[in-house]
Length: 193
Image (cartoon, rainbow, N blue to C red):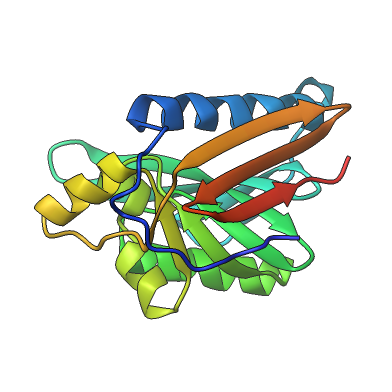
């Protein structure tokens, strides 16, 4: 079960930083790929629109891939993760825009019958939190490290709601677990085998 508790401890000591968040993100993706039996065949893909697809890694984990036009680069892909448990989803990174994020959330509801209840951006760039304004509009809680929050605030971007003060990810006997602490309040997730 995903457990969410409010906390606003922006001034607390942060034990994670951008590099740590990236390492954790890569660790979780690697674990999910191993859990899913990546080399055992084709992964299930769900095409939500011309610009968004989901790639199933396990029963409760998906990569979302979205495509957008970047002026000097053309059509560019960006991706993130979706963890699902008991009809609730936790999103790691959004598509680059609010409209693509809206499409993603609608697709998750329509295709997988889940409701997004939380969000963590990897960093402040629009390929990670470009859809944060839409998530805030929908009342979805967002969590980030202090550096991401500070940079977002300095650039007048939407600011995640809560500061992550501790983050741990583990895999034991094929079960992925991660937990974040926001001040004294925990957020935990454990996957099914």
